[in-house]
Length: 269
Image (tube, rainbow, N blue to C red; front, side, top):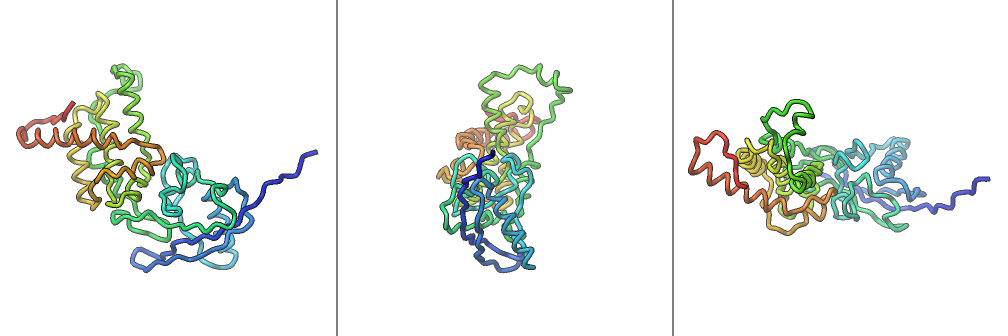
């Protein structure tokens, strides 16, 4: 005989930002989410609310999602004033209903930053991050198949540091958490994970200059070392990478100024 589940349900009030389009005014609208399973994810709760809205003939809440496994970074929500919700090292899809008290009022809004314009409701346009990466996030070294690439010696500590930077999923939480809407942590992670490896040395100087300049061009703010970025990062990418990127940037800028004809501009050590 299977024992009946004794899971206590949770009911909450959602204050959700609703905005019909980029040029339309927005406002918070309250919805009741009742008798929820505490083990459902935040996105599943929004699914339930949307099902109820659809049955009533109302417009469902638009929100972005994809993998729902904390890998892609698509599920970018500000929950009670914190990107991705109240816990560290998780994306919005890994935030669960049990994180909130029964009867709680939860405010849900999109990431707020000028370079992230609202498309609709909780969905923002974050292609600015893609443009930064496209500006310089590549290597031109031909390494062939996997065995050829693996034949290049990389020190263990360097490989691990590069992997720490490569964990960035490009969600934009660092931008949303920063009072200046700076993308420095994102750019630093992308610059560092390529710049640390031997395959990335050819474009090292050009890469950091191109990506930082593209970041400034797109309207992201400056870094004032408040460290909200690393605190909000779902992958705990360290703000130490910003210091590393700044060293590379200064070295590359000096090299560009005094040796502009150099084909490599490999940057600093």
